[in-house]
Length: 82
Image 1: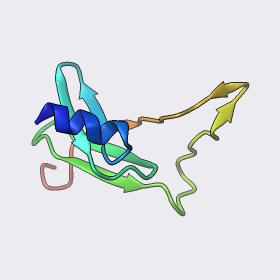
Image 2 (image 1 turned 180 degrees about the vertical axis):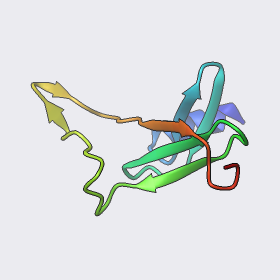
Image 3 (image 1 turned 90 degrees about the horizontal axis):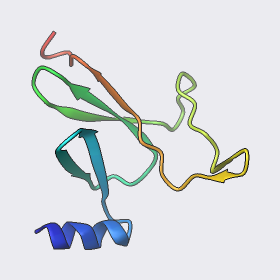
Image 4 (image 1 turned 60 degrees about the vertical axis):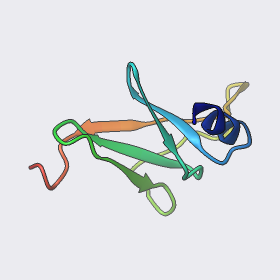
């Protein structure tokens, strides 16, 4: 199973998520987005970036550094757990 997921990641069909140390998820959504992680129930949800002015994602290059992946995770409590 992990060989298949690794191959899918190499061809950009999934992205690995490292929400916290020692735990790995794979995300089939490879478009730019942010993850929210609920510390109570463990749910991971997506926030899409398109049309959002409250979160700024860096350009593909910043001060000569070429960015190939951006990973942002907000950790807190989801609406169901609150």
